[in-house]
Amino acid sequence: MIGFELSEEQQALRERARAFAQDVIAPQAAAFDESGEYPMEILKKSFELGFMNDNIPAEYGGPGHSCMDLAIVTEELGAGCMGMATSIMANALALTPIVLFGNEEQKQKYLARCAKEFTIAAFCLTEREAGSDAAAAKTFAVRDGDDYVINGSKCFSTNGGYADIFVVFALADKDKGARSMSAFIVEKDWGVKIGKAENKMGQRASNQVEVHFEDVRVPACNLLEREGKGFRVALATLDKARVGTAAGAVGLARRAMVEAVNYARERHQFDQPLAMNQAIQFKLADMAMKIEAARLLTWQAGWMADQGMRQSKQSAFSKCFAGDVAMEVTTEAVQIFGGNGYSKEYPVEKLMRDAKLMQIYEGTQEIQRLVIAREMLFKGNVT
Image 1: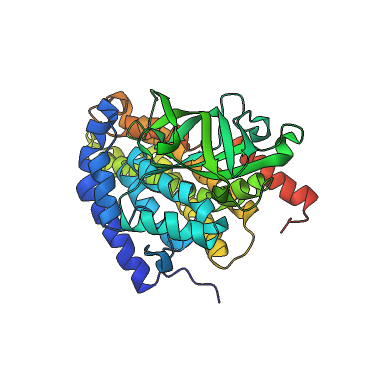
Image 2: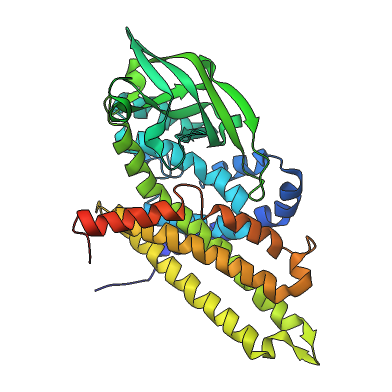
């Protein structure tokens, strides 16, 4: 029997996350968007409440949230401010490779630390010339005795300017190239240098920076999985993380729809509320249908991940569809607001700017469509 009811625990989790988003995040969203400052105190509060680093298993001191739990929380945080939600949930992205592929020593050292202490982590895969084409990376990690020596640069590293721990993807053998991609846990104190921060169109409360590695020595024991298994680590990580990205997009779209509904009820034109206009009603109905569909795709991917099922196609479904829905819904919300929607006095212009990134990071929409098509054409995953 298929069911769509959340458990009592999940309902309580959603209520706590919604209260945090509405009472703490949303009232400060415009100010952080304007200043571009990093919301450090809000991140600390989210850690105290168990919303940050929440994918750390209970045996290492973490909340042990499932993928579905993470989706529930991220939808609520995304409704408050997607920039802050990205800052909070990027830690789960960075820690996922350790959760999935770390050995016991690595988990005890890093997961237990991040569960106990407020610690920021960053995921370092993208390079200036290797965005969607991760195989074109030019960061190298050369074995030297008991260490690897990393040289290269990463960009768009979320939380990188404040991180103490980095999961870094680098080529371990110049002759093998992309086939030698490997993943390493790197500590900032080992010589990591932080470059320029991005001045972005939206999600300005999140921090994306360049990260430079110049002869950074990393103990070989900090290699995740095995040498040459970096692509496997990255793809498995992104399959899980994309569920959270999709959930954030759902929350962002839901917030825009709520704003549009309230405005349509209150705004009068031609001696009646906008809500009495059938064209507006149809826009709102389309918003609601697409948001619900995006949420269900997200929940399906999250449920499959929690069952240990392969969900590459479903994660791509959810991320791609939800990201497109967020962009469409926020654009329509601006249209419903008319001239006011274009003004910073109202929240929907920020929501629209924030939504655009949902179509780009953690794999562009074009990459998601490639994943889906290849699953269908070459892996027999048609149904």
